Length: 335
Image 1 (cartoon, rainbow, N blue to C red):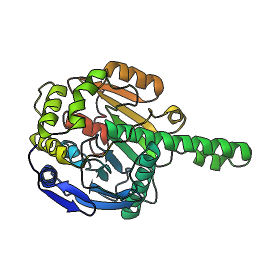
Image 2 (cartoon, rainbow, N blue to C red):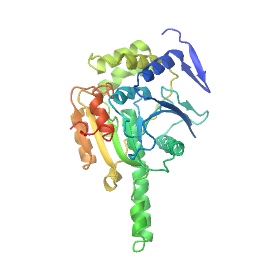
Image 3 (cartoon, rainbow, N blue to C red):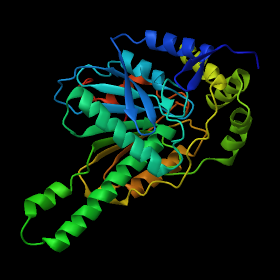
């Protein structure tokens, strides 16, 4: 691996090659983007925001997959994402991007992830003056796993609140009981080819990824992406950013169980799940069947001809409609 010049931001060192690729990818977004740094107990989170702050639709919060940054949503923005609502594209703390982890306060558990995201939503609320209203929460891959855990945590909390409230005030407080059934911060959940949510990872996928994970280099990243995408052409700016991320300081990602989605069915949370038809990380058909069993009220679809790591850049029109039907009227995404 060649020597890489690095820039230091607060207490994190960002490789210059990555920062250059990141800036070049964002420069291709066709709309004005506001770079926002939101303080949380786990560090300062970089969010790239766009769209009107006074839109009637709830804000859309986007979480990228592992090893990716907020820049990955550029194709969806070019396809019209954010025309009719506020959109916040997040750099995950501890992953490649411009978020800066707090010293001595690493994100180590699922509980840390949900606490970080809650604090981030509070910070975005304060900045945009939203008064703690609901959001549409969407994620791809590892970001979808985080989003699912966050929604599940909120739903379980609401269900426990409801049960306790009903036991204490069964006859007198129907209105408060109804309020307690609200899912909290998430009123719509969109999962793009979620990993470790409805199905585990295929052993072959894990083995193929191991060299890149153990000792990442641009060549290993390039080789793995070419294998997973079946040699299909990928966006050059995104590919450059992914390869440059190999020089990013390595942080062990949070792992844990699959989210318990049992309580989501009893709350007014709209759930959309889209699987990549050519994904190698899991069996898309079996994962989709598991999603339908776990969430009978969810809208589950498989997008043919698209690999796991090609999302959300590939089929950007379909993905943008799914993420933001308000900004892309006339269609509701893949069926």
